[in-house]
Image (cartoon, rainbow, N blue to C red):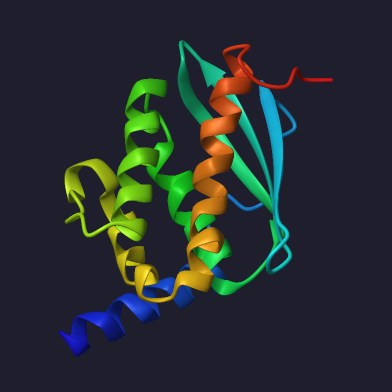
Length: 149
């Protein structure tokens, strides 16, 4: 199992050092910003939405390796998915890192590499930040959250 943990650790570092979907979209439907006051992580998500699907997405901000790699993975996994699927992913991700729930690769995709975060309670909020942000982004777009300026 330690070889698998090492592989996951390397993948997490790779995501943080070479994040996908980093930046801000000029052509966006909605934007949200979340902060983790515990360790100072900040993430801004911008997304282009068509037919209740994420057609394009980007994240910007700064933070620890876990928050940045989680954001990179999340943005890649939610592309071209509908809102209900994404909300299910967020709940599954939360269960994976906060409870003793076996992750479902079909639901989470490569996000399962972050399963080991549950061993480090101080880092759970870091890993969850981008997942909370995508949930809030959808809520905002659907008119259930704070309105866009």
